[in-house]
Length: 81
Image 1 (cartoon, rainbow, N blue to C red):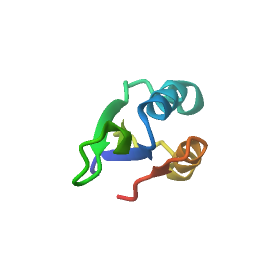
Image 2: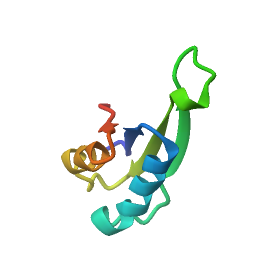
Image 3: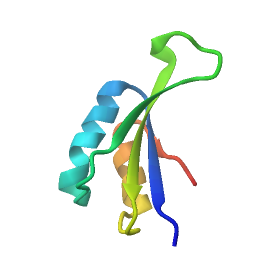
Image 4: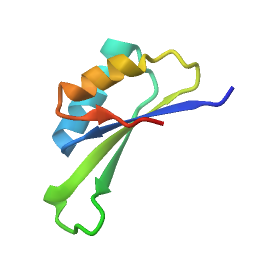
């Protein structure tokens, strides 16, 4: 069985950091999620960057629907694999 990686797409760094801080309490995530700045294609302006929260889920225990709901609370979404 392959490891699962969930990618939450968020509108800015503050939202990404807030989501990352909520993961341990809401989902029991023990591994530090990875925050990645994702500049939109062709855009140099930092204002046009999205932020990704990458969560490793080797045991397949995280609920994608719940992760999507968490991202939606911060105007983001769960990227579909």
